[in-house]
Amino acid sequence: MHKHLDKILLSEEQLQSKVRELGARISSDYQDKNLVVLGILKGAVVFLADLIREIKVPLELDFMAVSSYGMSTHASGVVRILKDLERDIVGKDVLIIEDIVDTGLTLSYLKENLRARNPASLKICTLLDKPDRRKVPILPDYKGYNIPDEFVVGYGLDYGERYRNLPYIGVLKPEYYQD
Ligand code: IMP
Ligand code: MG
Image 1 (tube, helix red, strand yellow):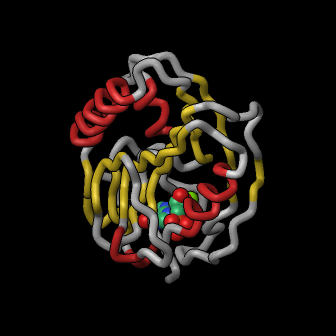
Image 2 (image 1 turned 45 degrees about the vertical axis):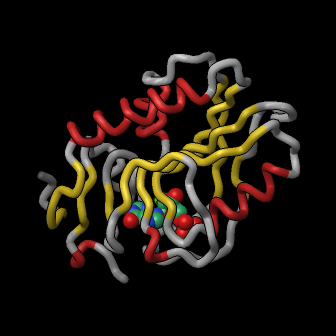
C-alpha cells in the first residue's frame, strides 16, 4: 500500500469485478442504441478504459473536461467547461462516465448543459458515490459503490494531481491534505 494512505478501501480485484458487472449491464441495456461514452477528464479515465473493454456493443468515445476541485478538497460550486465534446450528440444515447459523485454540482450542471443539445437519452455511470455529501439531487443510473465521506485517491482519483496511477482506491492520510 502507498505510504500516504490510511487504508485501502477498494482493492484491484474488487474494482475489476465491479467493472465487469457494470459492463455487462450496460451491454444489455444499450443493444441497438447509438451509444456515446462520455468520459469526464481526468478522474474517470482509468475507470473508463477498463469499463469500455467490458462493453460488448458498438460505441463512440468522447470527452469533456470541467473544472472541479483544483488543489483543494472542497467543492467550489463553480463549474467551467475546459474542454468540450468533439462531435455533436443529437439523437445519440449518451452515457456520462464519472469517477465519483460528491456534492452533485458537476453532474447537475453537465446534465443540464448536455440535455440542451438534444441527445436521445442521457444517463450517468459513476464508479463511486458519496450520497451523504449531496447538495443537489443527482441519482446515478449505474453505480459501482457508495462510500463514506472520506477523501479517496487512486484508480484515476487524485489529490493535487497525484495518486491517479494507483491500481486500487485508498483513503489519504489527513496529514497529506489540508482540509
Ligand atoms: P461534485 O461536483 O462535488 O459532485 O464533485 C465531483 C468531482 O469532485 C469528482 O469528479 C472528483 O474529481 C472530485 N472529488 C470528489 N470527491 C473526491 C475524493 O474523495 N477524491 C478525489 N476527488 C474527489
Ligand atoms: Mg479531481
